[in-house]
Length: 165
Image (cartoon, rainbow, N blue to C red):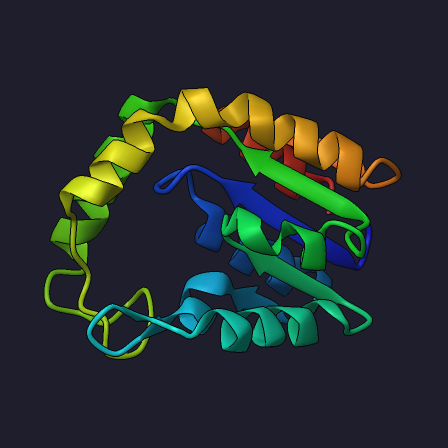
């Protein structure tokens, strides 16, 4: 297993949970892109400020970075030695997002000052995930050709992957 691990996939697929498990197993710092991207009240960070924070996180010797934000792939993929794509079904992702919302009702879990929520944009993102997957796979193959590429589609595959760490 490498020391620079990118975890990506659909919202609700389990990126943050998997990143925490990988980080704990390998004793590697974990960066959640949502925490860099969002300001209190769900205000987006200025583009260059966000990119600078991602570039700083990706420039260290070891990291686990979870999140999509494809506009920062150019800052992460060239440095990643392992790219994990979580590819759960849209139904699984929707179920998990609703379950998370109920569990974290009123809490600031995605980023400081951002109370958990489900909105039409999030549901639409999840529903359209199958159309985004091919582009993401092509970008990973093209921009991180020497990285170990891991595609995980089920909880069983995630568990088996974690057992290899």
